[in-house]
Length: 115
Image: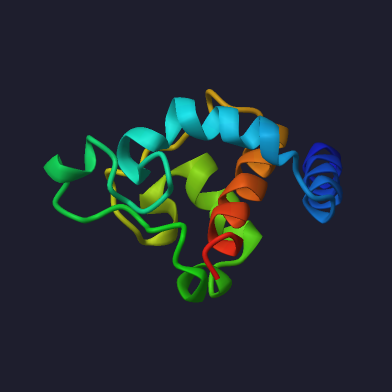
């Protein structure tokens, strides 16, 4: 129980800080761009083969409805964990929590730059 409390507290405290967009951009290029596209529009080279178009991170109206915690959960645990596409992989075993928060900061920047 104590481990859960400490882990949850660490996750919450880091979530309160803004992630590093530059580090997030690097991770995005490695893990996300193939489906979500280099510019975040959901038009990456792998997107054409998917039955559901990946999220368009430049859609500010959509992105404002998604909490940082929702984005964290879908990135870490995959689409199925939040009732979305099972084709959205869970990256939690390959990406540290800090790097997920960095990725979220970059994704938020994509939306803000198109508002």
